[in-house]
Image: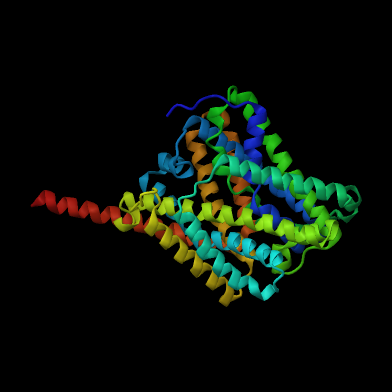
Length: 424
């Protein structure tokens, strides 16, 4: 596959911002303040420093080995097909924890728009699951135009909030951690903040599309991430200043509550409607993306053939049914177990972090000698991040271990069958 080298630094910056700005902007600032208090700003800066080398490793691998398979393709090149397929299963396992977060965010903003009580969020979550499934069944595909509108709208909201909400005055809310215990408090949010940077693997496909990759890509990556961090930090300061954070529901509705405090109640409801539409559309695309993954795995024989069926519109119908069922189970588990939204975020982060760690370790084998230092640095920062994600890594490690055993067992069984046929 030949990439067209058409991107300049400004286009690259726009693509970087588009990759990282989404529903996380509606939840993560408040959640990080709830966890780290006035030290949240430092938690964001530390997380950015940890993630940056990983982004560059993906960019280097993407320019050297362009492939739609992304991370699983790189890992397969270094460690074989069994590892590649196991990473595919790991991606699929995110379905058990990831969509529940987006669904809950959408439902929380719908509750604000409809002026309903907090206890209605569960019912609205169930309704949202089924309506997003219908959206996915319609075969709606992610479009760069829609994503661009979302990003511009969210940036506009943050700029207006910063202007009207006195961002400079909010800087007094920054607290500098001076003791070890204060640094520990700041670190509590790092594992959660990592959610903001999920999508790094998308960056791997950008490197080969620049007119001058060596010069323009670093500018695009650093420039785009600086804009993203600026947006998040502005909201961290404003949310701290106006106290629109607290319990899980308050954090989920934090941006609407902030709009209400600064611009008034009518603006809060208007923003909540817009936020629900954004979260709803993103969730529908999320479900469709997972359904495509199920359909692909079915076509390769990893799942029953029924899931590879496509409708006249090209939608993997039975795969959408499966994805919807698993997402619904995740919502029910979250409700009846009373596990927090933050726990689901860190479980998702753990799965992506394991994929990123394996990819960075892979880079030590695939990158040329003069670039291996970056692979080593990225591998080290990934291992550091596993400390902050903590026990939530167990979910990803368990899934990957089971998938590796399954692929090894399947390969051994096929080998035995081939041997028996040959003997006969």
